[in-house]
Every structure is written in C-alpha cells, then in structure tokens.
Length: 494
Ligand SMILES: Cc1cc2nc3c(=O)[nH]c(=O)nc-3n(C[C@H](O)[C@H](O)[C@H](O)COP(=O)(O)OP(=O)(O)OC[C@H]3O[C@@H](n4cnc5c(N)ncnc54)[C@H](O)[C@@H]3O)c2cc1C
Figure 1 (cartoon, helix red, strand yellow):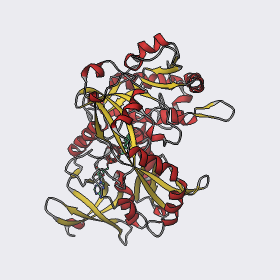
Figure 2 (spheres, rainbow, N blue to C red):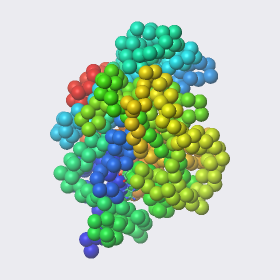
Figure 3 (cartoon, helix red, strand yellow):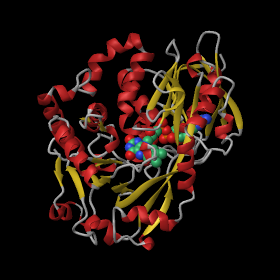
Figure 4 (cartoon, protein in one colour):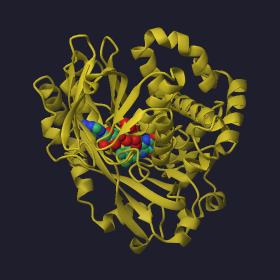
C-alpha cells in the first residue's frame, strides 16, 4: 500500500485546544494509537485558542452573570452555573494529572489565580446580584463568594474601578478568590509539544480541503501541503474536525446526515488593551458586568487582569462585531459559501429572526474609539483613551440549527459536537463556554465514538479525572479533597 494511503488510527484537524486535548486524552488512554494532526497555519494556537484571541477566563460561573437566570417568580436559577462549574473542575483535574506526571510544564505558564467578580449598577441589578450570591454561596462549588454594596469595601476590592465614582452611585459586586486566568495558547502549545514527544505527527502548513468516506467506512482527506505545494491524501479510521470556525465547512463536505440543517453565524470581536503599567498595577481581578439589552451573551463586557507573554496586563471587552469570515485568517466568502441546499431554509429563518442581533453587531463594528471609551468608563470612570490600544480577537461561529423549542433557524450560544451514527467522525462547532470545557467535551466524544473501549478506559479515566462520573456539587467532601489537590498542583487559591 502506498504510504500516502495508509490508514492512520486517528486524524485530528486543527492545532487548537480541542484537538490538543483530545489527542492527549487518547494517547493517555491508548498509547499505541497512531495519531496525526493537520493544521493549516505554520504554528499551533493561532486562531481562537491564542491568548490574544480569547478572554482567558476559566469559565466556572463564578462571575459570568449569563449563567444564572432570574425566573418569573424572582428566584435565581443556578442550574446552568453548577453545570459550567462542574465542567471546569474536570479540566482542572486533567491538567493536574498532566502537571504531576510532567506532561505539562510549570502551571504558571498556563493558569493563574485571579479573583472573579461580578459588578452591577442600579437597584434592580443590585438586588439580583444579592440573590444570586445567596443562591450560589449555599452550593459547595462556590466557596467564599461574598457580596457587597458598601462603597469602602468596593474601593478595597476594585480601587481602579472606584476612582472618580460618585459615592451615591448604586452599585454592588461579588467576589470569589477561586477564579482563574487561563492562557489557552500556552496550554495548547505545551500539550502539543508533549504529544509530539509521544510520537504524534504534527503537520503544520497543511490545509484540509476535502473529506470523503471510503467504501470501508474509513475517511479520506485531501490535504494541501503548503511547504511542498502538493496535494496529499491521508486515510483514517477516526476523524476529529477541530478546525474551530473552519469546522462547519469541513463537516459539510463529509455528507453525513447529522450535518444537515446546520449553519453558522460568525461574530467578530475586539479587546481594548491597557498600555499603562500604573493603571495595570491598580487592578487585579476579572470583573464581569451585565449584558446590555439586545446584546448577545458573548458580548458581556469585562475588565480582566490577564497574564500574557509572561507579563501581567489588563484587557477590556470583547466588543462584538460582524464579519463574514469563519476564521480570523478566513475569507469574506465563508458565510455565503456555507449556505447549502440542506441548510438554506434554516439560515434564512435565522436571518429573519435575528435581524436585531445583526443590527446590534453592525452598530458595534461602527463604534468609534470614543464610544468604546464610554463603555470602558462604566468600569473605569477615569479611563483615558491614550492608555488603551485595540487588539482584534478571534472569530466565533455560533451554530444555527432547527430546535424543538426555538423552531427553524435557532441561534445557539453553546459548544456542540456533531457525530456520525457509526462514531467514525466527530466535529466540534460553536464557541462558548469553549476552551474551559474542552475536557468535558472530549469525554463526551470518547463515550460516543469509542463505546467499546470506553468501558475499558474507565479506570484510567478515574486516575486522570478522579471525580469522573460524579457531580462534585453533590459530594462536598470529595470536592474539598479534589479542590485542595488541584489548587496545590496548579498553584491556585485553595
Ligand atoms: C473573543 C473570544 C473570547 C473567548 N473567551 C473565552 C474564555 O474566556 N474562556 C474560554 O474558555 N473560551 C473562550 N473563548 C472560546 C475559545 O477560545 C474556543 O472555544 C477555543 O479556543 C476553540 O478551540 P478550537 O481548538 O476548537 O479552535 P481554534 O483554536 O480556532 O483552532 C482551530 C484550528 O483549526 C485550523 N484549521 C481551520 N481550518 C482548517 C483546515 N481546513 N485544515 C487544517 N486546519 C484548519 C485553524 O487554523 C486553527 O488553528 C473565546 C473565544 C473568542 C473568539
């Protein structure tokens, strides 16, 4: 058999956090698997997983208000918050396992403790925040969450945000010390370095152009090698499409029935980055506000202490916007090219339903620097434009699909796995909560795509993720034990 046509056990498309996580889990569970990765750019983690392209929040619902809904009776529903927090606990456990066995380097390179805070203004929001804090702090996963509307305490918690603020402003905040800032770019690169040592073939400058099913139900990939300028063909028994915004067009090429009636809606973003070290030094937290009326959940403004390129910095945003590209390095034809006979009605329905969102995103694109400064001043009243630069964030492709609740063409804000019935191919679509939940998503994938092995792997999975199969919120003692060990190994707040 021609070596170009040899069947690999697993091919991963994309050099982002998702492929890196899946590759690492598979090599831990089955070291002899032959795994190859193909990435179209010259380096890993250059799209959404790059540290400048996402907000680096270890999503745990400690501060993100969109995970706790106020019900009609005024109570606060914390189900989603618990679910997101549980998922991040899985990631922390897997990283702990990898740090302890030397597969990941000094954890400071990819995760840091940063307090998480929520910040609101106006009586109604203050009351909501108080109720939210009461509801969450009774759950073991949110230890020590504290609420205050006291001006002096707020000055102590967030000095930069309180400078120049009138003392009669009706504002409040919650604070929890166990928050994190995650450098998903460094994490991805470190995971891939280790995979390389474990024999995984990492192919950069390799763009996957087409995917088709072979007669024996394996998959053939047509790949353009940007170094040799030649087309190659590679075959695999299992294929993961972890191409971020590029996943939808590739999934559409597979022809699997599960890919029908699915579309994507790209949302671009940008951050303001502080260039003044004195300002940066005055703030140490990730502070999430409330989304404006009509704004999508992913455009909730936040002011974040970040650790990027070994330096502490301060980012504000993201400001959402519209661009037809599915990747930062994509093409202006991506959106139109993704409209196919099997999803045209889904896409048209979404277009009609989401006119308000489209209008909002176009308005955001047209915001001037001064308008953005106005938004920033809601967080830092003394902010000056000259202290802030702009960086373009990653593209998020929100999934559009037909659902029972929302009907035809409903915009989804979550992360979705689309898997063929026989489990030989799986694609990851969507953006949020994204990278933080990579380990949870990959456990789901392993269960669906490798059902026979999964039962055999369970003992090993429990070694890698001690709480596997249990809800930590229902096992407070186990949570405390695991929280102590992950915090120690990852250098986090206990
Ligand atoms: C503005 C913004 C803020 C965010 N904030 C957070 C946050 O605070 N916390 C969090 O957990 N998540 C956050 N996310 C989400 C998170 O960044 C993503 O969920 C995650 O990075 C996705 O990883 P991925 O590996 O699927 O995709 P990516 O990192 O985008 O990787 C996909 C790779 O596939 C490659 N590729 C594409 N097409 C092809 C092809 N045809 N052939 C070969 N290679 C291809 C691309 O070049 C890219 O390298 C944010 C995202 C954005 C955009």
